[in-house]
Each structure stands twice: as structure tokens, then as C-alpha cells.
Image 1: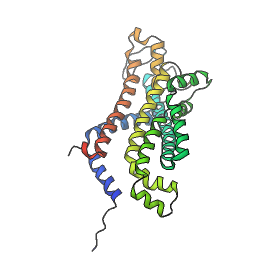
Image 2: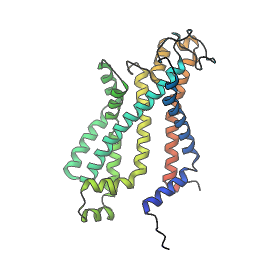
Image 3: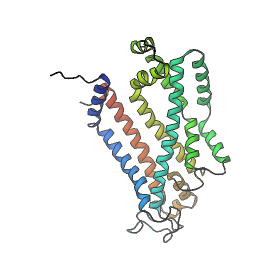
Image 4: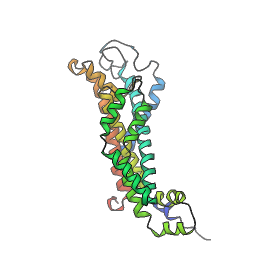
Length: 291
């Protein structure tokens, strides 16, 4: 009976999965993100009133009825926190996803095609890279009459891709000279097929870790915009909760339950993503693995 040997890619991913299951940093970060994501997705389904509805006594501390207390307008802080988590993950997904797609497309194209195409794309990347992204976002948000999660995520994504493009381009330039890529060219395969089937799979771990960084960066950028009052004009987010708490004197009134949960939520999400990234680095890099 003949035993079929697994392909190199399958062996590599099987080995990575083996170490991923045993990496405490990756497991801890994933558990926190999963818990917060589940709260943001499931909790709003069981909350009858909207996050900005006046449902209870004003400025009430956390209790059995209102787990996170109420604002000084009588809004349920837990309802706002749950909806804010959903908005935070959504803007991270949109902003990080757009930045990843644009950056990888530009990087792969510039690195593989080279020549004039590389020079033009590299010039565009450098122009966007030197633009003060936060200033551009502030100006754009200030002049928009209606701001939402989708618009905010799109603007963040369109300003966050240059460093990804440069990193992917550098990796592509290195891989494009390998023997397996030359063999694919000689076999008559098209450039797009070579990039997606030969080059990108050899960068899959790096691309996945890059998306995690973009995801966390988009969340931080959105929280900063929300905190200065340039967040969504409708709905609620964690950054907007902190903005409202500061605006309406929660610090002076000692209403810690209004601003602590959103602050801890943002910190937990971004911190867990960073821990996950460190864990993934240890999983994918044999030199950093803990046997």
C-alpha cells in the first residue's frame, strides 16, 4: 500500500496549526477578541431599546438592572457599549480590508511587473505616504454632512495602504526571481496566475499578520476621530461614547462607568490584536517557536 506524502504547503500549514494550538499568546488574544466580538454581535439582539433611548434614571451606577449604569441622560451604558463594539469591529474590518486590498494589489503589481509600472505605482505610493493621514481624515470628516461607519472605514482604508504596498512590493521583488516563478513563466502562465498561485501563497502568513495590524490601526484611527467629535452622526461607537462622556462632564461628576467601559474595550481589542500578532510571529517563524 502506497502512502501519499502531503504537499509542502500542506505540511507547512499543518506544522503552523500544530504550534498555533500551543501558543499561549495567540490563544489568549483570540479568546479576548472572540468574546468581545460575540458580545458586539449577539448582545444587541437581546436589547429591546436602542443605544440612545432614555430608558432609566439619570446617572445611575451599575446595578442588576443596568449592568454598566446609565448616562446622565438616562441611557443604558451597556446597550451603548454592545452597539459600540459592533461598530468598532465593523470599521476595523472595512478600513483594514480596504487598506489590505489596495496595498496588496499595488505591491504585487509593482513588484512583479517592474519597469515603468513599478516607477509610477511607487511614485503614487510615496505621495500618499507623505500625506498627513490624520489631518486628511479630520478635514474630510469635518466637511461631510452625514458620517457613518461605512464612509469612515472607506476613508481610513484609502489612507492606510501605502506602507503595505511598499512591504508587499519588497517581498514580491525577492520572490519574483526564484526558480519556481521562472518555471511558471516558462510554462506560459499569465502574470496574474503566477502572483496568486505562486507568490502570494508564499507570503500568506505575512499578509495575514499585515491585515491584523491594519485592522487594529483602523480601530485606533476611528476611535481618535470619534473622540474629537468627528465620528458617526447616527448610532454609537466606543470612541463616541468617550467623547460624550467627556463632553457632558462624566469625569467631573465621578461617573466612571460611562467612560471606563469604552476605554477598556478599545484597549482590549487593540492589545489583543497585538498579542495575537506576536503569537502568530512565533508560530510562523521557526526561530521564535517555543518547543
